[in-house]
Amino acid sequence: MESLTLSSNYDIEYRGFKLHSTGLEAVGNPSFEQWEDVGKFIKKSDKCVQFWLGDWVNYGEYRWGEKYSQALDETTYEQHALENMASVARKVESSRRREELSYSHHAEVASLTPDKQEKILDLAEKENLTVQEVRVLVKEEKRLLEGGGMEERKYTPYGDNIFYVSTKWQDSRDDSYHKIKAGQPYPTLKRRSWFYHEDMREFSLREYARVQDFPDSFKFVGTYEKIKDQIGNAVSPKMAKYVGARFKGKTCGDIFAGCGGLTCGLEELGIKSLWAVEREEDFFRTYGFNFPDAKLITQDIRKVDPATLPKVDIIVGGPPCQGFSLSGLRFKDDPRNEMYKEFVRFVGALKPGEFLLENVPQIQGIEDEVIKDFSELGYGVEGFLVKGEDIGMRQKRHRYFFYGCN
Image 1 (tube, rainbow, N blue to C red):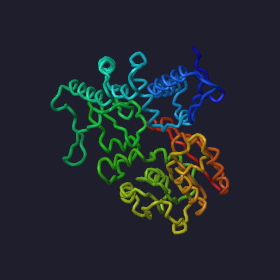
Image 2 (image 1 turned 45 degrees about the vertical axis):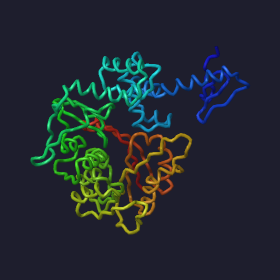
Image 3 (image 1 turned 120 degrees about the horizontal axis):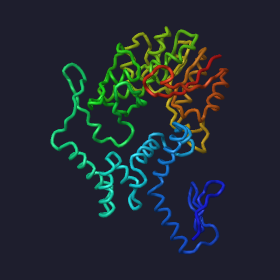
Image 4 (image 1 turned 135 degrees about the vertical axis):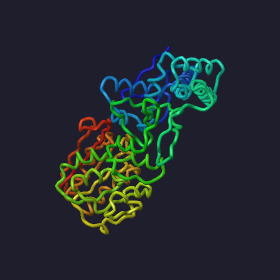
């Protein structure tokens, strides 16, 4: 039987066919039996490729620490997808994986204990159960574990004489859910993270804000979910203050301002926000409550003319950059990166003495191009990684910054 090989371009060569990133092609004149064998190989690959990726990410993290920036560069997956694959691969060990079941079957049982995983996977394999049928079994196992009937959940204060009961924990199957022990570091808080005390009370909104190092005097406006989004999406004021210590200017404009985490940290340094641009009205209500003297522009940044805004010493912001890890496309040509181009446009139009661009660590993959874009505007640019645990934060939050001055 012919062995499976890899070409110099990492294409898979097997049984008279070459499988590459854009399709399959015959090599020579393969037989009908070879064609059948390749079909079986593709079917098997479809069931295990996500486990391959999950195990691959976990091995890299075990050997060399967090390597998601490299993993994103080498694959076409978003970070949350890689995180989920890695989580399922950790929780469902290879000895429990069933060759005849799909990755989705295994993902459904990942939140259960190993013995419960075995029980349901055995049944799914024997009875040829669908993913939906497995999901029903998993929910029933959880209900039985909790004793049926009304669940014993802790009430969490939301406001004066108002309490809520979290519905999130029972459905947790990934690394967005964390039970926090007293004194332990916080994981990175995202828009869709849920933190719990040891007695299973979910963190209150103020406790979530403290994870991001917002001062208790900072006001938040909105529904519970909107406020939680604002907190999880914010730049930590403590990190902003640490990075902002290098600024010489005393006035700033904040684009992609969110609820005002960056501005909060900078104002503690005596840097005053004159204006801010943010499309999300729910976020901007919070910004306006905390920085009433700033001019607020609540619209799509692409429709904003920088010439209508006051000159400032500094422009800051964290534009979304969903496309910077896309293999084979130049960063500036990726249509998903219009928001980054808007940051460049504002700096080019207003010519501040300094600027600060904040983003996730994966932006290092296009660092040379970012520096080139701003260098062409006459700025000297420095890129650097900031780790929350290195600057006195309890949260393991890593962010990358570009500081420019002319």
